[in-house]
Image (cartoon, rainbow over all chains, first blue to last red; front, side, top):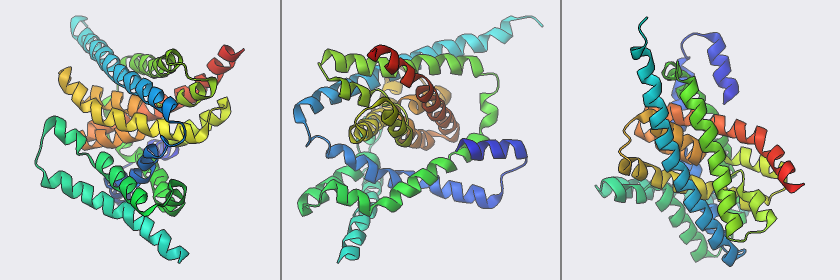
Length: 90
Length: 234
């Protein structure tokens, strides 16, 4: 992904139409490609059920906390950062 | 016989996807219920149900669906295009993005490991849970390096992505955050590929920030985590 991005960046021209169409199609069906991988999480519980509940709980809380704190932080930082240039006179 | 089986299992994925998207369109619900009817929730449930009914185990299904895993890797590469097209959005935002990235990526790891530690998980589980906010291929590479359980890591990563993609938009709503840049970046950091797919659905700008978050988190985790683990295990 980074390689393709850097290639495009260094070329510095518009994206070839064929490439854009392909990528658009790929991204449209991203969910379809994700389904087999996602199914895997239903079959993990079989191995060690007791531990799995704890793990799920910690993943759940940590993910939610990260989203909340991260979003609030970025909101703050972004607001402060974008205010700065206006305050500064020339 | 073998080929027929493989085809059926591939077809199951396709049918589940189509049913799930159809269901989403047919049920005209909004807001919270909309998130739970997502193709990424319904689809896997349908496939899992099918596998349980027919008694096929997941390993077999995984082998049969190799083409989808392959296409997934390709689709991740295709994400470079929207990133390139929306690049002008990042200009002059290096500092706030870096601050958010540093905090969120490290907090994701610390909080997950911390909670697991409190719950009394063993070292092996802790190592498997640590790379949870990177994309699956990266997470597997990292887990390999630091010595976690690979199949466990794969499951944890996917679970994190699904949770983030479902609850992320709900939480943004609750926190009244409307900026697509924030939504995208946070979804990319916490919920990697699955969150990015969700972000691309919100808007192209949102998607581009998610892709940036996904790539940056992966790189940061891959660079830093092995050293942290080495230090803490000593």
